[in-house]
Length: 462
Image 1 (tube, one colour):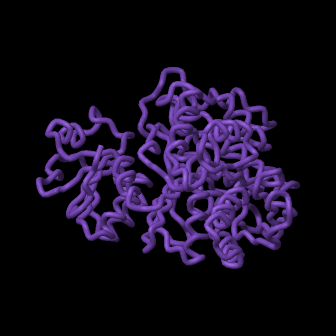
Image 2 (cartoon, rainbow, N blue to C red):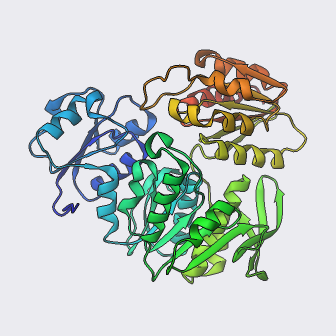
């Protein structure tokens, strides 16, 4: 489907508060368009959009849908039977497009670097963007989180390069034709959409096959399934990155002191770079940095500037945010897939090998819980204590028999607890005396609980 984005003067979003939708809203605002939109609830992000001059409505009303609007954009997470505005636009045959369609249309005017993966894509896309911009490339970027270096999820550059987070949900990434694809993982997820792991793999393969043969596929080598997937894609150059393995570019001689990594990089097994610094904690962030370093090498960037960039990288909001106090360390993380949880907790155990860890998790979506409750339990069992909150439904209606208790029953940790949302902050604060490393994870509204616990510790006398 061809979308004409020339002379767009007014845009309306249905679901403007979503992280991907808000980045698009900021893009159109930067182009000089009037931007408005609906969202279900007021959040810190929608408040910030309003401060930037974007009108946000919290009531569904077709009077918002004015005739002078050039384009309407919606997220497939919102269904017409649940939203009168969306139903009305479909009935009126208005110029209505999915977010992914519009993003794909924008990306056609750039050399697109698309970062895909079941997990790791937001942090990888963000560090890639920071490296490229620090090296003077001047990329634009649509990110799936708020970059702490830029305080935004949309960055407007002045070059032909664009970094895009390629979302597999609803096969959205198939609207992209990247010049370079970076793929971090291809695990099963969104089975409510795909139906099977095989269908997910097939979609990832289609996405990779849309990469420009003049460009490259950059992939994480430590994942055997991902290696097989990438190997099945022909006629496109492939470059691998990894940590302590035999990838084309590998992090080696890794040390972790004072919350920061230092490491060397091997190129095809030979010494290449030494003394690379990384400004954020988390083993997965080290892996993500290797994706950025590999891309920088392909593009021929100055490696001294690349080292400066990785050292000055501040991370992404709610991606392994570490808050350290004398009594306790609190880590706030967006992890909502079993593999993300596993990697987060493995990183924590590497960082704090002699301290008891409490994992607090709010499952996201009934369907995801139904499909992966055993995998969630296995990953969470890496912690000494597990605390489970009720499922955050997001776009879904409840499924009979599906609850956090399914995970709870399978958890093997010595201590575990089911708790109501309203009681969580006080409970976590109390138990943090025994478990001085607290990892709070989830993609719903558990960040508000993390904020409450952090405020309790901030208020203590020094």
